[in-house]
Image (cartoon, rainbow, N blue to C red):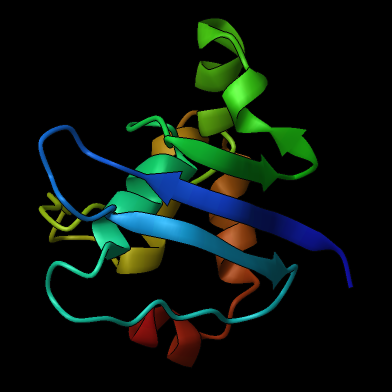
Length: 130
């Protein structure tokens, strides 16, 4: 399988804090896999995701998504790269009258009529779960 996400030696140290939020984290995610990030409050989960999409710049390490090293992207390239991913934040604002699947697809694909056809390819039971 193809690796779609690779994190290499990722670190994040916030100013005026004694311990790093992320300390040399490395892992990969294969295309089609189901990955879960678990941890206690304050363990760095949110910082990790904010570093993945470059809302926060890591102090060290590398983030590779779909073969691109995101730290090396300029502002325009980063904006274009972010459009290829869906993100639902902790403090989310979903549209309650549509499914979670439609909420995720609505960001980038709302202007593309094909998205409804793609959604229909999923069984109804999966759409209810999603």
